[in-house]
Length: 315
View 1 (cartoon, rainbow, N blue to C red):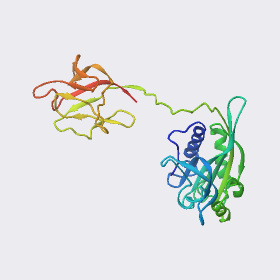
View 2 (cartoon, one colour; view 1 turned 90 degrees about the horizontal axis):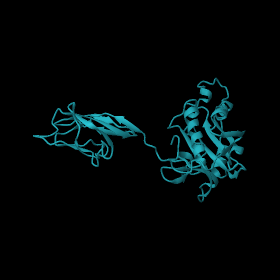
View 3 (tube, one colour; view 1 turned 30 degrees about the horizontal axis):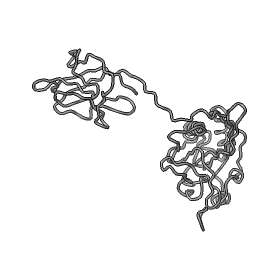
View 4 (cartoon, rainbow, N blue to C red; view 1 turned 120 degrees about the vertical axis):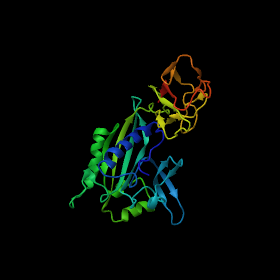
């Protein structure tokens, strides 16, 4: 699952996801040496009550919102039926728990209390970048990696406490999966909890942002070929491309490669156009369709012709 994020983090989840992503990039991947396949980083998890019948999990377990399914999930693999605790197949996992209630301050700001839970296998990560510990204990080093990062890059979060006793770390949860975590031989397993406070403006990040398109002047050169090479393309930003070569005919319409729709339709195109370096000051051009028409015999656009336009593109 790697770093599980929301498509648009709303209000308090914006701060959570910002911190989650920073730690994922700067500590979990860069310092601990983890990657998308061996560590699961989650955002805000819910403390949900479950009762899965005889032999199943009962009690309170953490579940995260899975943006791929739109449902709440309890993790993957061994822990998928009983909560997001240890998973021996990976190096670790982590998630946030929000401790209710959120308090409104006299200033109008809100204060929220969080628990950030980490479950790691110390033999599969490199705390402080240490790959050869020579039998040195690394549990406190692991905690310090997160605590020190929060001190300088906490996105508004402040540390109020650190808990390392597994029973206390999981005090808000219950059930068979918790009992298994308590009874298993822990080393080199290690869990810890960072208690935090966040003071934030509840009026920020309350609507989906609208992307502001930026104008960019481009001057592509197009080629007319008897047999166009569709592999010859031009990048126009946002990961999209248009064809650079087009077939003979009396009309010319630049097209997107992914949709075959007109690239120029509705865009500002500066006159004159240039055909074989000759300026055309009053071209027969349809702004709505993005099509330039040049009649001729046998065609207006023939093999070997090249066209240059100055276009205002938005990216």
